[in-house]
Length: 135
Image 1 (cartoon, rainbow, N blue to C red):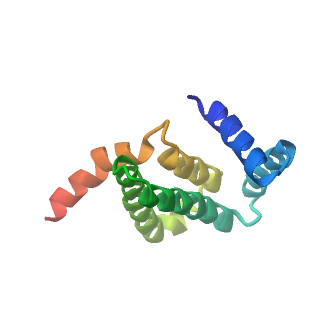
Image 2 (image 1 turned 135 degrees about the vertical axis):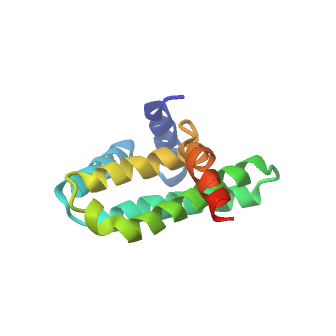
């Protein structure tokens, strides 16, 4: 399933459950992107995207009977924490890059959208090797 199909599906679910018209959801998404693009509340928005939805999905995973989803979200949190550590060390330089927060937002979304499996890739190819070096 593509990212656009996922957005459409989740928008339909939210429209049914909360009664929020789909157009408002799409406007909120576009407003968020525009806000980050223009530099208004970019740090707050990227952190909210990186924390709120994954936290909600993690709580749903903990409540489920299967353990596969627990591993997915635990991997996300390990990778996200590693990213925050790297950003705290090099953020002063990274924030000087044009469109840094757009890239950060895209990276965070890539990490937690299951279709992409970004967190698993970063963990497998980067963090696993870094942890071996530190041991």
